[in-house]
Length: 528
Image (cartoon, rainbow, N blue to C red):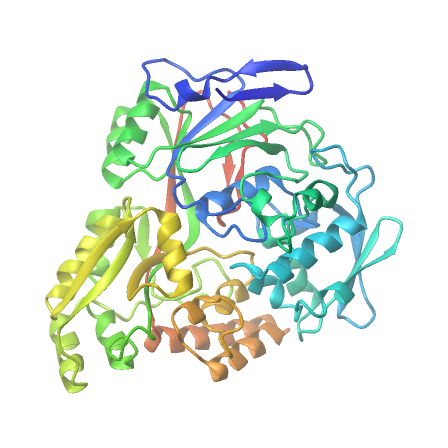
């Protein structure tokens, strides 16, 4: 049975976790505890140096802080967090941060320059999936310790080798991988050279408004309040994120009052709940981009640009958006989401099986069976079935292989797939957050999406580097538009939709906030 420790009152609250994991007919959830129902099968790691999935990214703002943070209403505005202030170096390639005084981790340990050094160093040296984000600064395992240094009492200096300006660096420092972890708590948990990664997969060592009490894979994530958080004490005593893989079950639990918030409901469930009017439905614009990822190294067919071109005409974009997703996504065929500078909003591709067949015939590409691992939840299975039908008309049998999201992520990152359905959400509010994933792969050293597709593109990578260097906003936006057109026309990605999150809330919930980016989920001001 899970329990929640309220340090402020010194009272042990029996949360009844096992009871919470079973559906009941209670009219309401326990007071002081927020219960969220969603699928958490995607979770791989709650270590901010590794976690790169929706569940983990949505959690990081609850348990960690960074030196700086994005404004909740306007993500392009950067505000102090663990850093009270910062100064730009005369060389234009360094920043000196003064840490907020008296800031403490949930453990009670003070936040020190050594913790900042430890956090960035381990993130680079572990070289997990999101490490390429900090790698954009030119940081490597060999130079990171010289790039992040203590300069005085409570001060830290960051320098970078990449040809980018301080504004871009500040944007990167808002990404979850830039979270600051408590070295004194994590280091004793290290196993050989893992910098405590094994322990942090299911624990936390941050300064956010909550801390991880327990995490049971495929069951629940339990968070306790951290009343000493530098950002302020949360209004809740704790949060339970229950794993409810079935969307129908999530709807039922929300209607019964067994959960306070439901995420990831299908269009049918949302429509029904709106008609009933017993729950609030919050529509939140999202920067999520949905796409097909083609493994160009899997075989000659999938590596042929003619196949990539034909596949663009084998997607029923309008039918999926209007009939399956119904307000949960819009057709969007570029890697930058609407709302970001330089976003390309034209959609040149439509379902045209005859045209696809001609492209394939001209290239000498015949019918084939293609393995298609897909998240075992909606709307991904619905989208996969639509794709199976339209690809089938051109002679390609998509062998849908449903699996829990964590398994699908692992297959994609290790190249153990032929085609898979994925989504991408920016890690920070700058166009390079997406360009660095879809348009960079010089040498297969960084785990970008392009690398996962087996797409080696040194020339386009150089163009992406030029775009991030450009300081004139209009010129920079034009460079990103050009990059998107190139990727849109010929790449092993079929970009299809931009999402819109619909979150169902109990009428008793107040103060919940969610922003454009996936990590912008805020529980600290929630009341019930």
